[in-house]
Amino acid sequence: MHTAYLRQRDSRPVEVAFRVVPVEGVAKYVVVVTRTASTRSREEIETMLEGPQAQREIDAAVADLAAHTTSGPESRRRQDRRRRLSRVHDASVRIGSSLEVNDTAQELADLLVPDLGDLVTVDLAEAVVVGDEPTRMVGGGRPHLLRSAISSASGAWLGKVLMPGAPYPVLPDSTPLREIQMGEVITLDRASVVSALGDGDLVEQLVPPFAYSVTVAPLIARDLVLGHLTVWRDEQPEAFQEDERKLLAEIASRAALGIDNARRHNRELRAAVTLQERLLPSATTSSDAVSTVGIYRPAGKGAGIRGDWFDVITLPSLRVALVIGDVVGHGLSATATMGRLRTAIQTLADLELDPAELLAHVDELVQRLGAEAPTEENPVGATCLYAIYDPLTRQCTLASAGQLPAVAMHPGGSTEFIDVLPGPPLGVGGVPFESKTVELEPGSVLVLYTNGLLAPDHEDSETGLDRLRARLDSLNDPGRSLEAMGNSLLSDLGSKPTGDDIAFLLARTRAVASDSVANWEYPAEPDSVALARRDIMEQLRVWGLEDEALDTELVISELVTNAVRYTGGPVGVRLIRDNVLICEVTDSSNTQPRLIRANATDEGGRGLFIVAQCTTRWGSRYGLRGKTIWTEQPIT
Image 1: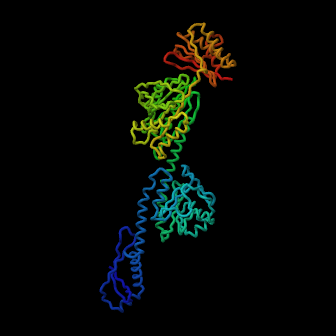
Image 2 (image 1 turned 90 degrees about the vertical axis):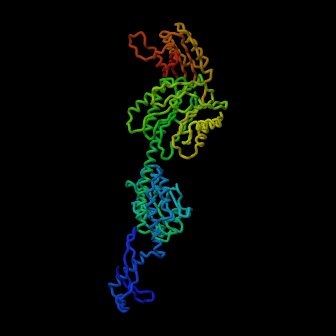
Image 3 (image 1 turned 45 degrees about the vertical axis):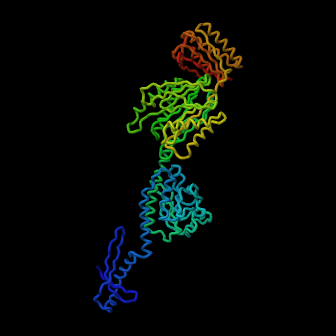
């Protein structure tokens, strides 16, 4: 206990005892004063009050008493401020839970209102919003900033201040602007801000009405100035204190890391999406076999890019291959695997294999990729459906590796799933794939899709398939374009981000007119070569293609001659008129034809060389029995 001497309100001196008590969580102390029964006379106490040493003790005691007394409005305001700062500090550690830049900015703005300010704005560099690194600017001009978030204590926006998404106007050069750009925390009153801006329109856009003070803190992460945080006060009477400025700078630093993490995530996601989209074919195609529309939409927030893909591959003899697939996993590794599988399928498609045989080869490839992949990565696997449509026969042959069944929308109005026995997903191995052939009328729409189209995520596949079939049935209108149909399917899913990629392919079938195709069959006899030449020449005359007669005659002679000499059984010849002239010769042999260059003294071996010189391309494909050699010639 200490002794001090005070004067009461009635001016009488009094001796008191006081002690200093530390309070937990407070940097200073509380002075507890107790009046004591003094043994000194009034005159002695008056003398003590007039002494300099006593006066210093009294002044210190009174100052501490005034500063730390437990009652009074000033004390309550200080306690309220400490509580506000404590709440803000505790809540600031939760900033950055989102991987969206604008969401993180809004979290920051909402956190500071109303404890630290009445209106809070967060402005970010345009480059940051799209995932790129910002460039440092010093001085006036266009700041390349966007208003990313705003929060008001009253719940209403004040005046004409910039709204979220609005770009910053051109700013005049000023000392406060340069300080902000250099990463300093500054506090200004309204008059200083208005003086720095100068222009009345700028003041309306950037200064809330009735605001009287502002603190601006930079958002800096990894030595990059991402933007700035602005806290305005127009109702709170207190000016910004030093501890508030320090707390604001600390919160801005934490928030900047969260914003930068979201920026980097968006950059990686954008790179993966761009890679995925570049690996996909054109969204719209048109050929003699089908017209197609493919749609791909990446997964939503935080889900990461997946490996969904579709493909349309043009095959010889006017046929077309339709592909839909979904790679296991997500991220760039899934995208890379998708690119490798798409390339492999395109290469195998050129061999014109049966869909089941093609999937068997792809399955072996996926097993090899899985064996080569690092053990810490996601396992390599995929589902896939491969279909070949022939506009000449109007038949579609499909095979599935764990993919959802395709849907056929018939022009008559009916809609049905094509029940293909699904094999295991690619990479499992050990089980053969099976093909199924169905006939499709011209104008039918074939729908291939991944499971993202079945959303929502919590729904079982049977319910999702029933809903998809009902929706496609309502869209089954021959007059409806494929683009409109695809947009309707997407709109059903809403704008809410999904947890999986969405990829689907719509293909409307076509048929080749019967008068553009001619077929013949000949016995495997030498006389058949002359008969084939005669029939071909007559058909070219009917089509008005006499200019192509010489080359076509040579091609047919060589191919039919080889079929008669080296195979048994009948020889089939087919001529197809399109934008090119297609010749096909079918025999019963499974021997692969090979182009060789004969020596000058060789008697044979020049047949396929002549065929290659007379055509733009040629090849062969195998059927259930035998093979077909085809050629293409330009029509002049």
